[in-house]
Image (cartoon, rainbow, N blue to C red; front, side, top):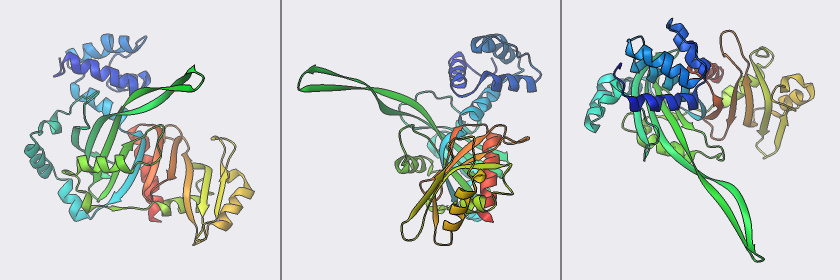
Length: 340
């Protein structure tokens, strides 16, 4: 059945249910002129997807691509880097990657990416080359299981004893390294719900990907110019973005912050707040935190996309799941703003 076994098919079904909507998959079937009506996920797979796999209308590669689109974009802390074009030409090089995969005994990853649900350790499950709005790129995908403790409750078995109970919760985390042929690179680390510092997770991703993406060849790229230029050009961008909060500090350590009363409002709409930020944001001031929303457009983005710019100088957070086209659109806008 289209080079896919039942175990993989069951795993892909579970992963798509966790990361995509039925509407996303129905749209994929529509685009291929395949029958797509279904009353639920089980119906969609058993009556639409499985028959299409059997008759060759769909392949394993199609399902793997759907999974890539569903789980690789958004809910990530994104760290921006740059290397020279000469270094990039060596990294985004199929022969070099094949050679390295051969040394590791994993040349299958280029043609047959693994479908991994709960690996016992961080696992490289996909190494590929792709083309997009930034040109050709090398992509390395890592899947791991992370654990955190969730408070359940407490009890008092005696007057001088309190017992607090925690539940150990597992989360499947997908992180991605992507290097473009011009040397621009992203290290995308899956977000925790209860964490703000991703230094350890970032270093672990670099360590895993280092054989394909050598860490020492890359420099951090500050997104400070993007923060400043998006604010400075806010009137021209009024139909494109909205700010819900901003926090600045100057060379003396003085902090100025402003926030709207809701995520559907914008600091652009409040003259007092905007003027205060304008006055404070001189050559000595730095932006520590910006909450920016890219407003749904035609055709991109297909819905509002929330970006938080805070933390490290090269760090931004895409707070919700999104598709590749919307993610790349926002990243492209940030790159352009950062070069102004």
